[in-house]
Length: 157
Image (tube, rainbow, N blue to C red):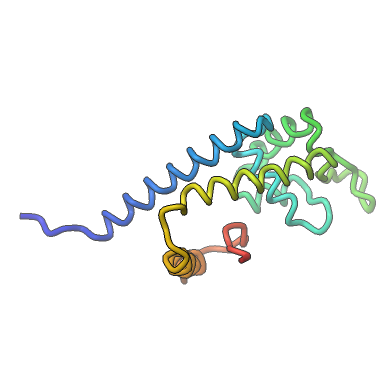
């Protein structure tokens, strides 16, 4: 007889929860009819963390994707009027990506969709359980042995 594998069960639970979170967030995004994919949403959120417009290579590094993937995302967001390419004032050969007013408005909507999705997911938990879960998630996010953390997943409240 094989002994139970508690770590295997936890891994499966985490994967199932991650899929559920993505599914619920996608539904909340679709209800807001922003026409933004989850990947584009992530790029917009990442872009908002920069103090000045980053280069595409900076975005690719922060998102941990190949630069070509960022180009495709930026192309779609630029066509939708959410971002624009601007020349670097110090080196006109360098192109930087900045949010437009429509992009900032989309970010506000995205934040609302994420909050609604989180509220739906966390609804069965008491305030005390939420606090415990938050502490556990912080421990996992900040855990030892991880590569450079972008801080994107950190809770702010």
